[in-house]
Length: 76
Image (cartoon, rainbow, N blue to C red; front, side, top):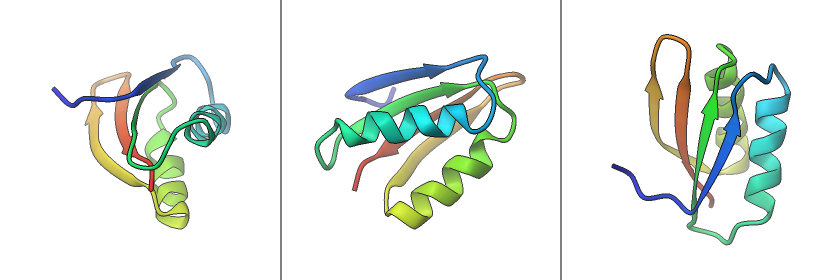
């Protein structure tokens, strides 16, 4: 199990809301903290991938199940 500092449940939300929730969470966190994001939007991995690459954050782990994606993202 990966340790995290904050959990964001974006289940049931469609693009761009999961990404906006992630951005809002990261703004409140110190550098090096990890946020866990639960998303049901099938395109969330694309949005999160592009955003983390551009912003310098790191997706530590992505767990994809049938209807849910769980991201662990470390703030730069």
